[in-house]
Length: 228
Length: 249
Ligand code: HEM
Ligand code: SF4
Ligand code: FES
Image (cartoon, rainbow over all chains, first blue to last red; front, side):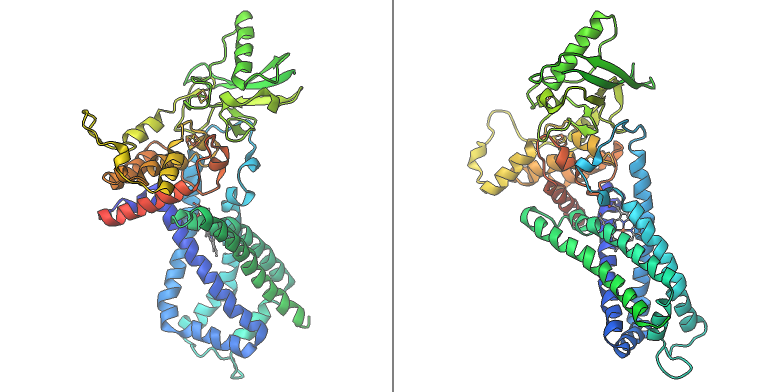
């Protein structure tokens, strides 16, 4: 592959799409495990412990995920700036809703909202997790009473109403992001054509609504099933 | 009908420019948009005011010369027509109409509503052609069998008139729809294969060099294109680009 491949507009598009596709796969996987918490605390604990201690997940998938997230939002900002600079004198009268969706025009806004949520999520889960496992060095995943801590931590998180509200809002914006992002990523890598496009768009819309809705359901479920 | 017009006036490329208000009376609904501007210009000349400069040539939707961003839409509110084919019956008595040049840094304003779209020509020069011997012993094109579906798709892509409405209506000022049409019309035909890889690489590079923005697949271009050039062409160009890069090494 030539050195300049990805330093072009089409190259950036393809990389943006690949990182977005990877993030969507990650979301689907994350949702599957979280859904276990509604069905059985035990199954959720088992799955979390596996993901949290498996070396392949920890030292391959996790770094790839970190890279994809950082790459995706940094490139998102870079492209947004470049695109703004491609028209420095703007129109006096604009009527964009006649030809494109709000979602497609405001990926940066939905993206920033998701980014804010990711920061919160990091502080809530990821930093304590890394601290326990790699700083304190406790890989057991157990609490003082000898049971797994994961389900307990999850329940604790969803006790707080402000957290649940932030959660619901963020996933609302994620849904908007994906209502454009899903189909857009397939278009970027050159996989949409004619009839295939229509089917893919329908599937994309289902994904973009169902996946965030799944996360919202889990948050509400745990909030409502706990005593306050 | 009587109309209020807000029109971009700019003396030359270096002038700052501004929107100027005009009024026009007794416009016939059968007039084309450009005829309406012709009438306005006659009136301005009578009053000793410099007429408004705008681009046009064929006035039948084939040359791609007319432009104009009318009430927030490239080529105005109608679909699948150029500004020269737009009729005044699309407007109502008393309407205010904003008329602006196609805007993108890659399309600098020359004067009033006239913009310099030669960036498109330079992209074409970078690869939008096939090298054939035209010395008189050229093979009959019909001697090469081409699947009907491909011939139709190539023809659809070839109907792009290079007007630049796609760039004007894109929030990113991206030229992807135009370039993808010019890549696709050859990518689908055997005659285009010989230079296919260099074509897509060179044209994409030139497009970037000219300062067009990055596509984010909003799809505004497809809606505003007077020739209905499909987004499928962009998808095809991305495929061509990726495979050209991988196989050329
Ligand atoms: C889990 C989180 C996220 C997922 C699953 C996701 C997914 C996607 C997908 C699939 C696309 C379409 C790519 C394409 O057009 O080819 C996209 C585009 C975009 N994303 Fe994200 N994204 C996420 C987080 C973020 C964050 C945190 C930002 C931060 C600003 C962001 C900013 C953008 C922007 C600006 C675009 C449009 C860029 C373009 O199309 O060129 N995204 N995203
Ligand atoms: S793709 Fe459509 S809008 Fe763009 S230059 Fe060609 S004809 Fe004009
Ligand atoms: S003047 Fe030729 S297309 Fe409008």
